[in-house]
Length: 259
Length: 347
Image 1 (cartoon, chains in turn green, red):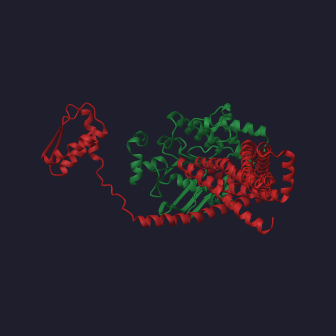
Image 2 (spheres, rainbow over the protein chains, first blue to last red):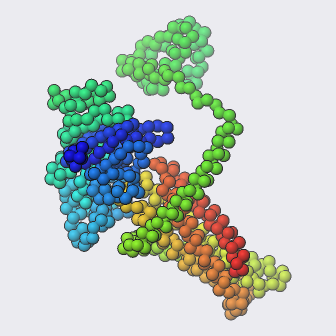
Image 3 (cartoon, chains in turn orange, green):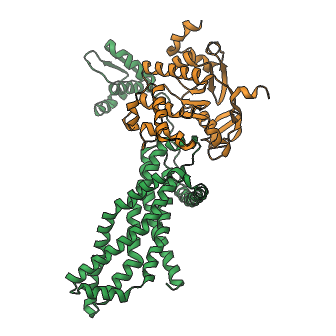
């Protein structure tokens, strides 16, 4: 284990999360390796976002351990979580951009909080991040309310990448995007992972992005990870829910590739 | 359509076989298909034979679809004893009140911690935000505060002259206006105005940030929303309310003075001289000392209600209402407690 530990970006062990009488995550264990893109799939309302929000400390857990880059995560108010926070970037489903700040100020926000930089340098970095995610420098002066859905996601990604984190968490990054924009987004994530050596934890329903960008896919059903591995392994899985997910009508397009 | 279908149910129950000819029907929607299906279910349930013929091909699918729906029996939730429901509500309200107290104290505590951490690292104070909030809750509030308190002062003076004149006690109107405005009304009216004006804005802002996950985004960046968002707002309120109370009190005294001149026939020199005799610094202190505490209560209630907003737009509206109602209530309770306190220390 001591040899294996540094290779893990996220280690979740025996995690239980519930609200009231309902148990959403039931003794779940999951390892995410460094530098990989892990896709998490699961039924709508099946606890994917809950798992992600628990890992980043937003939802309290009943029991279990979570480590991110070797640091234990306690909760949002916990010191070790706050120190880990500098090493991750999060893309929320709705973007969660600060609505009172412009796009550029949004991207600069994590820089301003964590580093002491001159305004000129921060402007240059913000422009660089904007261009990295495929936006124009002029977009930097817009407010979040003026952005389209796809642009919001790109800006949110730029903000998540502002501090060059080791891990990015993406909550349904391609939902609500047209196939071309979604394809661009996938390519962008893949490029960033290669160039920056990112670890990506991605919650998604997008079969195309699972197929093209994810190194491994984890399937969450009944509060547990029922299958994990490269896409081709998951397509062979015997678990009934996983079979239904990957062999349904909508996933027929994946079949020729897999076989 | 529903009435038509109800009208044939009698007939339906009497006849052994039912046959509906749909040949002439050109358009059919889900509603019509469902009424048809209901008729045929009723007939078959009674053991009769039901048949629908002549359905246009393009609607066959719709009829078949409707045949599958509403099969499961919706069991209505069991009727509850109204007494128990009422008791349940009362119990929940009581628990809710202690929950409110807990939330209030928790916010007070985290504000205190935030102040301690700002004192330790003064650079971490959000100066831009603080100045902006001061501008919003202080500077921008001045016109409306001046207008309202001016009118209140004028009305009190007018009422005073009208009634006191009967006893020939005209000159005591100035005592009444001066003491009432400086001790109680100035700060109370301003606090209520600020609770409605700025408290509601705080709740709505923080609530919508909560809904849009902006607060979560802050948390995951390792920042404390209390320090970033709430502390500047509360400090701005605590700073602005005493100033606004002072300005409001002056406006009220001015309003009283104008009424004294034009309605009471008491010129400015006499009004000011009477005021000088009637009031002392103590009265002014009693009023202005209350202001920061009222501001703190308004700020804490507004911010903690904002953070209690759940996902829906209705919940945002509800928490904003709760915030205003609760802060006005607490401001008045606090004013009462202060009255007792100042009376017992002889101020």
